[in-house]
Each structure stands twice: as C-alpha cells, then as structure tokens.
Image (cartoon, rainbow, N blue to C red; front, top):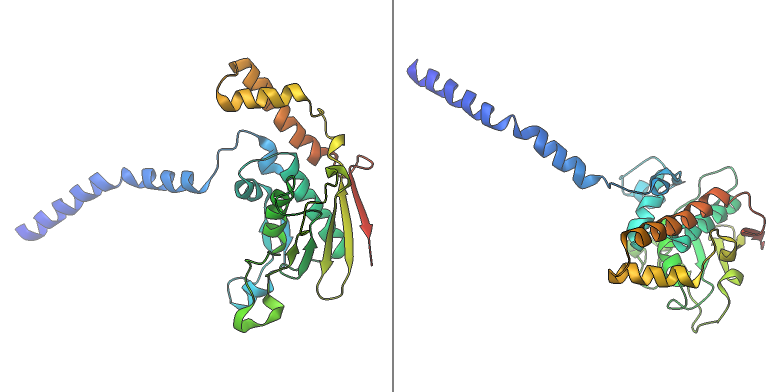
Length: 247
C-alpha cells in the first residue's frame, strides 16, 4: 500500500511539473508554423487550387491542393511588384487554359520571355514553378512513373538576354494534353505609386541602415502600396494584364 501511495504521489508530482509546460509547447509549435505578417496583403490573396495527379497516384491526397501567395513570398524571399505580378500572370493563364475547371499541376509548359538571369525573369519563374509544377532542367524527370509525371524542362528560357523592355515581355503557358496556349503581358509601368529614382535611393539607404526611422517608414509604405495596387487592379485596370489566346 505504501508503494502504491508513493507511486501516486510521484505521478501527481510529475503532472504538477509537466502540465504547465503543455501550453508552452503548443504555443511554440503554433508559432513555428505561422508567420506574423506585418502586411495584410500577403495573407489576403485567395489561394489557387490545383489538381495534383502525382500526389493522387502516390496516395498522398485525393483533394485539390491550395497554393498560396504567402508561400510564393517565402520562396522568392520577399513580396514586390514582380512577385505579385508573377502570381497574377499565372492565375490569369490558368483561368484561360482551364475555364470552369481545375488546372492540372505538372501538365503545363511555360516559355519565359528572357534568359534566366535577365532582369527578374528568374524570380517570376520561381513563383510560376511553385504554382504550376513546371520546372527547368533540374526538375523531376518522371522516373518509373513515365512522362505523364515529368516536370523537367517544362519551364524554358531564352538562351541569351533579349533586352526586351519588361512591359513588353510575354509569358506563354501551354497545356500538355491539348496544346492550348495563352500569352500574358504585364505592364509594370502602370503600378501606382510610380517607381521613382528617389525611392530607389531611399531603399538603398534603408538597406544600409542609413535612413531615418521616418524615411524607412515612408519607403516601406510606398513599397507595399505598390504590391497592393497590383492585386487591387489586376482585373480592372485596362492594359495592366493582357491575356491573348494563341490557339
């Protein structure tokens, strides 16, 4: 009886010590999986749902998979007019290629408008690849599952820089199954507030730690206002995004 009593006291003591820690662990886990965004736009963009045949083949999902802008921001390392533009370009291409139905990830080819190190073409590609599953020569080759699951070389670049002005660049998306193609243009010159040399200089000062708190605050507001403008006007501003069916 004494042993049972001592064991019960010992268990009670352990519970007393451990129970207060459970909320701490839960809180730490929550914090580790959530991002405290200071800019609302990043979390408010609706996700793009994709059908995932390869995940279904492997028994890993049987539902559409959401792809989010905040994950695109993590991949690119920041939110900006280019990252937001790449997101919208991809959304509009998928809406055009798959009207009224779910786009199929891994079944889309993308032709980039320049070489991979030209302007921010490579940044656009990171976002486009994340959403569509299309990859450059480093992608998954399909292996024993066959070419239906190949991701390699579904994104292609120009061999050399084209020197095309960004507002005239054309991104081409193509369905592998039926050859349907769509071309998307994105005129960044329409973004407000407009890009200005003094803002570029202030951004450099912020990065060097030489800007005043007021300068840094105003510059960050300017930067993030441009991103918000892209999402707010993507479907309403004439000539901002141009969609052209090629086939």
